[in-house]
Image (cartoon, rainbow, N blue to C red; front, side, top):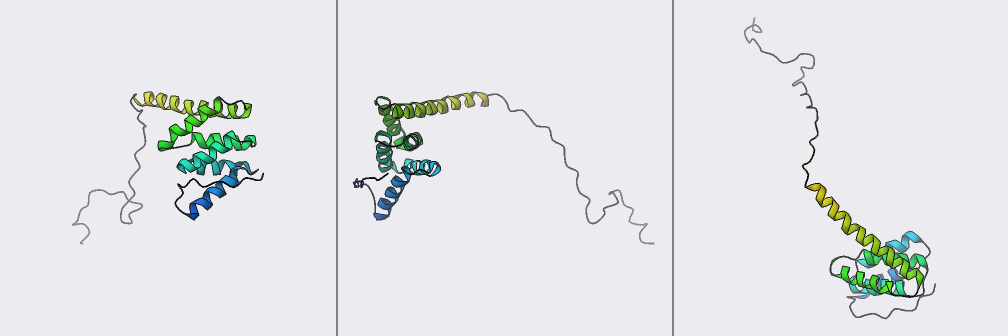
Length: 160
């Protein structure tokens, strides 16, 4: 798929970051599913620029695997971008494209499942932990007395 050149937003720091964003954007549209998903994850760490690229992939005329990876990247947003990613997914639920709606719905189900599972895990921690019974290891013999166990010594008997 031939991509149009992306207009820089002005938030990029230098040429290296521009080059990296363009490379990740191209990888998002390839046929290798693992590479698509990996690039979506890397874009989720790229703040506003990554959000713009993932939003473009989700709402644009692209393949289902690209839209699915964009949904994955949006739900993996961290920090202050997490709410923005969820807003984009909410916006996707209102679209007319059935693939986009399906991807956004699945991403929301996964996000909600994570929040509910954390609550259940917190309740289980309130119970006292079960103690594990272990055997006490035997002490190894000291100073080369492998065959003789240590016992009381009589110092006078050795001097004769």
